Length: 74
Image (cartoon, rainbow, N blue to C red; front, side, top):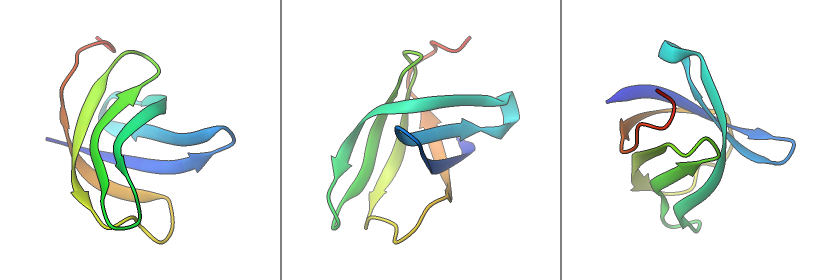
């Protein structure tokens, strides 16, 4: 699992993986309600990561642990 950061960008949520200096826009998030937020994140580079669902954070940026599902950025 990797440490990631999610922040609000000009055009939506932005995913950042410091270990690889990878920054990508989040195209979709599996769960996006106040009670359940997270799950599978699909990135604009074709990659996919998974974060454990939780209550929607009150503010961004937020640091989380994520599991890599896709290998598009390699």
